Length: 82
Image (tube, rainbow, N blue to C red; front, top):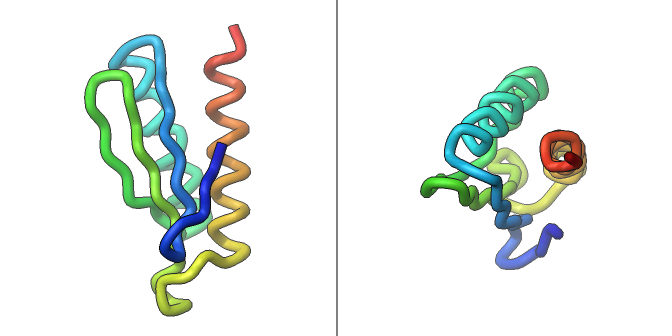
C-alpha cells in the first residue's frame, strides 16, 4: 500500500528472492522510461523501497506519480499472484 509522506508516495515491497526483485525492477524501469518519470528506489536482496515525487512540480505528488504508482501496483500484483 502506498503512503503519502513529505510530498512523496512511498511503498515497501517484498519478493520471494533477489531474482524476482530484479525482474520487477526491470519491468518498472521499462514503464518509467516509457512515461519519462523515474522513481527513487533501493534494493536489498528481496526488498525494494520506492519513492515517487515530481521534481518539475517542486517535489510534490502529482498525477504522474499516481499513474506510475498504479502501474507499479499492476506489475507487482501480476508478479506475486501465484
